[in-house]
Length: 255
Image (cartoon, rainbow, N blue to C red; front, side, top):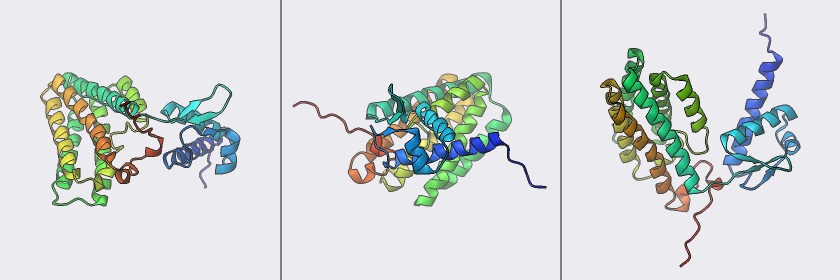
């Protein structure tokens, strides 16, 4: 007997499809900072009905990619390097608090075991003589699992909700700049530092050192900002930053 798809499930699927399509248009630069977006124009462009488009636009506003206009519709938002730094700091502060809670309250044994298993897998990856683009892709997945387990270790629905909101901020994801490392000469060094942070924070959680666990995760988040600064050294690597077209160049100081 065929599975019945409810109207609500179908609507949700269309909203997700619209949201992903719109985000791709923004991050690829097809929709540029300052461009106005209307529901009807996106209905025609994406071939998706108006209600999912409307919901998708609201979600992208909540994620920080769009500004709602007083006259109706939305405009693509631009970002300064300072905005990105603040988003990364916000995520690091929340993850640091999660690590502190996990250490002070005591993380569940199965979660700690899973974190240690991931550490071993990342060690094997990072310890290779040379890393390929495929290796970096694998690292993105493992790194995402590690950060998810950190939230599990904190065992706080309140903190989970706030971190989930923070990582949706543009450029704030734990893996937001990992793939561009594949073309940076400092790539292996940065991944080695990141993995040392992972290892030390798990040890701090296990040994119930809350302040140390928190400081480590805050410092760990700042690696993302370091990656961004390295990428901005030249236009070739800058263009590899997801959503780089949304980032406003720094204003030159008056000399």
